[in-house]
Image (cartoon, rainbow, N blue to C red):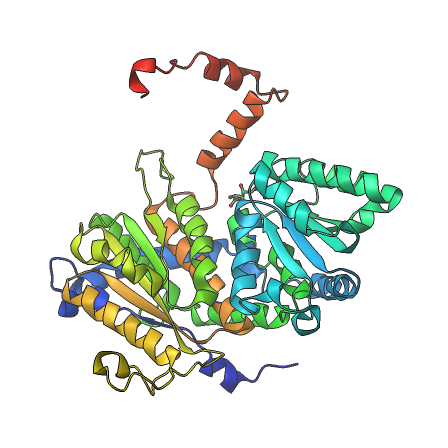
Length: 475
Ligand code: PA5
C-alpha cells in the first residue's frame, strides 16, 4: 500500500541541536555559528565522499531501501510460512547479526511479546542468542519445543566462532530429533560466496538469504539480516525501507542546516576535536532501549580506529554509552551533569506513545504525591526528558534531541538510516575507514588460534610467548 507523502512528512524525525550551541551552553563548551560555518568545508567534503561512494565498496547499505524488491517478496512469503508452522523463531548471531534484529523487535513488537498468549501475539515468540554462555544455551533448550522452532543462523563471514558453535549445537539436536527433516528448521543468512556457512547451507539444503558483499554487519539491519526476523514478527518491512528511503532523501543535500545526519555528524566531529570522547545515547522510551545498543556497535566499531586513511596514528573514536530515560536519571545523570566535560548526550524523544496510561487519582491528603494525579505517564516521561535536557544545559553539557513523532516501522527505518549516514559522514570527517573492524578481527583470530584452527598457528605461538601473568599481581 502506498504511503501518502503528507503522512510521511508528518513522520519526519527532527534533530534539535540548540543545546550544542554557545548561545545556550556558553562558548567554552558550545559551538558558535562561526564555528559551524568554519566546519562547512569539512562537512561538504564528507557529504561528497559519501555521495561519491554510495553503493560502492562497503557502502552497499545505502542502496538497501531501493534494491530489494524481489528479496522482500521472498522474505514475506517465507515469513508467512514460518508464522503458520512455528511457535518460536530463534536468531543465532552476534554483533551486527543480532543487535539490529533485537532493536527492531523491541521497537515494533509488544513490549511483552513473548509473554502474550499465542492468539494475541499472532507471531512466533522471538529469541536472539548472541552469546555463548553455556547456561544461557542450556536455558534456551528448557523453554523451546524444537518441533515448533525455526532457527535463523546469521553470519556474514560464515566463520564467527560464537555463531558457528551455536549452529553446531543446535543442528546436532535437530538432526537427532528430525533426521533428514532437520533442514526444515534452519534458515541461513550469509554471504553468497564467502565463508563456510554458505557451503554448509548448500550441502544441507537450507533455505538461504544473502547478505550483499558491500553491506557490513553493523550496517545490515535493513538487509535480510533484519528483514526476515521483522517480517516473521509481523512488522511491515516495506514501511521500514520506505522510512529509510525518506531519510535518505532528506539527507540528499550538502546544506548543513537541512541535512540532519550531516549536521549531527559535524557536531559530533567538532565535539571529538574538543575532547568529548564519550557519546551517550539515551532514548526516553523502552521501545527504543536496544536502538541504543545497536548504535553503540555502529558508532564504536565504525569510528574507533587507530589509523587514518593516510596511515597516520590517530586513535579516533568516541566511546558510545547506552542509557535509558528515565531509568538512568537515577543512576548516570549525576555524572553527566557534574562529572568531566567529556560527553555528548543524545536524547531520543517520542512525541506520541502508542499507549497511554493515566495516573490515577488518590492521596488527596498528600499534596506532594497528589500533584501527579490527572496527568499521564507519557506526560511524565516527556516532562522528565525536558527536565533532564534543562538540567544538562544549565550545567553546560553538550546535548541534543532526536525526536520521533511516534514509533512505527516507517520512523524506525528513518532512525536506523539516519544513524548509519551520520556514522558514514563522521568517519569521512575523521578520514578513517568507517567500514572495517581490524580490532574485532584481532579477537576473532586469537580465538581461532586458541582452539587450534588451521592457519592460525603463528598467532597461537605469539600468544604462547606473550609475557606470563605474575602471581604477585593477583590477590
Ligand atoms: O560489523 C561487523 O561486521 C561485525 O561486528 C560483525 O557484525 C560481527 O563480528 C559478526 O560477524 P559475522 O556476521 O561475520 O558473524
